[in-house]
Image 1 (spheres, rainbow, N blue to C red):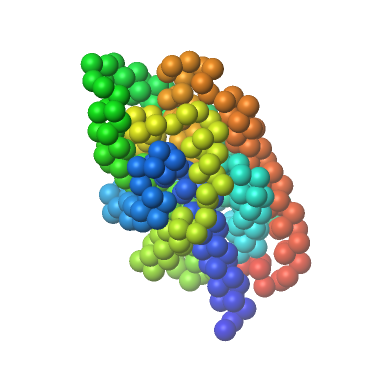
Image 2: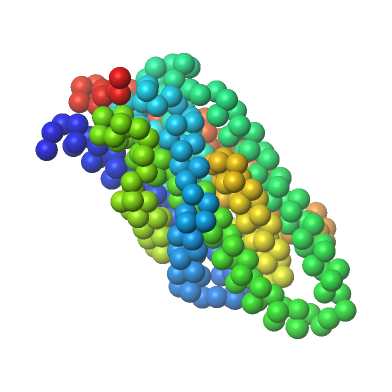
Length: 338
């Protein structure tokens, strides 16, 4: 195996590890409410989320993967060392926040990694400022969409359900919550599962193995498999945070938060913008809790989550920059696509 192929293999393996950790860390957020309300068992919810993730790709295409691969750093400046350093920074952040039980964004960890590695490798000229600014704006816009959407959906749903007994309403919304959970998991697949696809396609381009940015079928299958396995094996610490420590969640609230979150995810994916499923669902759960009273939301937990949102990109950028300085001493990593 040539030195270039060895490095590419390491990067592809690292991207799939990141994808697994994305599922391990983030994908549990899509099923948190349905597990906490005991509408489905964890195993059933995991299988449902994994299947729905695959629906997303066939429904919405690969716009988000293209944004990650070609909209954060200039493709012609991307070296293998830059890409690997970005992945290392994102993986370190995901592991650290998982240990702390914080539902932070794997998406923004990867974006922060690309920014930090790009700045360390080349400087500001490596960064596509327009794409990065749009992504940064959606750090605020995405959870606000989730919050406002969930607030409105919950208020309307409660008004419609007023004449009926609560036991009957809860029974109905246990079924509807399954539908909304499929929707939000599909939204997750349309957005989060495409990040590693974009990184691998960028790696093949940087290593001169493809003439253009191209998502080969094996990339799609490998990435969706990795994120599904991650969902199966991890994330339960974050299920507890999302489902119990922000506000009280019942079947009705679970349906409303998932329905609003899926709408926000579909909207962002349609625009080709990589957003955080974690941010959107956190915002929607806060919106649900705020309908009755802002006091129902445990704002201490919410504040910790928001702080993690703000810190994700700068800290992963710092980790990636440090990783780049460490691995750039190995000459085989310096491969550019001229």
